[in-house]
Image (cartoon, rainbow, N blue to C red; front, side, top):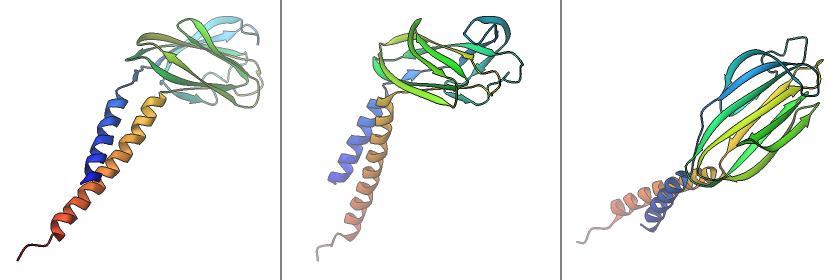
Length: 185
């Protein structure tokens, strides 16, 4: 019976902890030609969307003869102050992540694929993320990657899995106990 109660308690705690979340949408992306390989933005090529977490290798308009780049923006809503992990990466370019207009992570990634992860605390409310990528090696396929995670949510999922397993074991043991219970004669 103790296992049953412990499993239920862990499951409940996990659900409560999972409430610490970040609501995300998708990236609104504007593609550009680059005037050079030093980050001078040129003409708009097209617009597109990326999912919240993405890994493109090669990038969409990579077949163009001139260097390319993109600027992407996404608004997120942090339900309560929490730590958020960000990973940016790329190949044959330079990629930067800005949070609410301030530079957060800047990575030069000429060749091969390189990535970098950082974590920060975001206050409750809406925040604007922006990614800027531009190609520095025209003779190779450019790539870009982004992912975001909330460590508290990942821990909550593990707690819920463990709690669910203990709850199941508790139910099985309790049922076996009732079935094997000797009847008084």
